[in-house]
Image 1 (cartoon, rainbow, N blue to C red):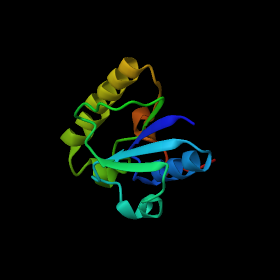
Image 2 (image 1 turned 45 degrees about the horizontal axis):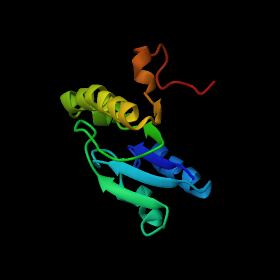
Image 3 (image 1 turned 120 degrees about the horizontal axis):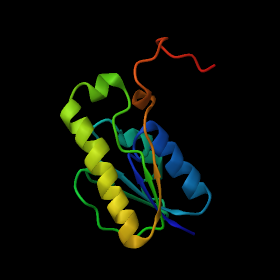
Image 4 (image 1 turned 135 degrees about the vertical axis):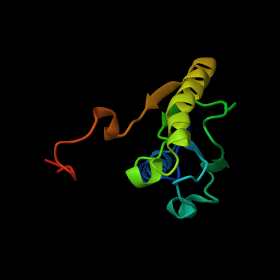
Length: 130
């Protein structure tokens, strides 16, 4: 059993990752500030013995003991990240720095996620899955 931190854990992808890792027998700490995440995505996990929820903004340091970190914290939809571009940038930059610092301190493995926006404006919108 690994101690797993999932930032953005109340988002669409994060909540599904919480489900999967708990199903696999891991202890999951879900961290979200609920800027775009929703408690309804994780409501079924509240009270599960391998699940813990923490309201926290990754732009501030986090001091926990974990083996794995999945940093998914950042608004992914243009509607959301354009609402507060400064906070979105802080989440992406300071959040990544804080999670990398945590990973270094506790010697955890880290997965840093990003949206397709890092590739710039697509030639086709909306993008096709093909």
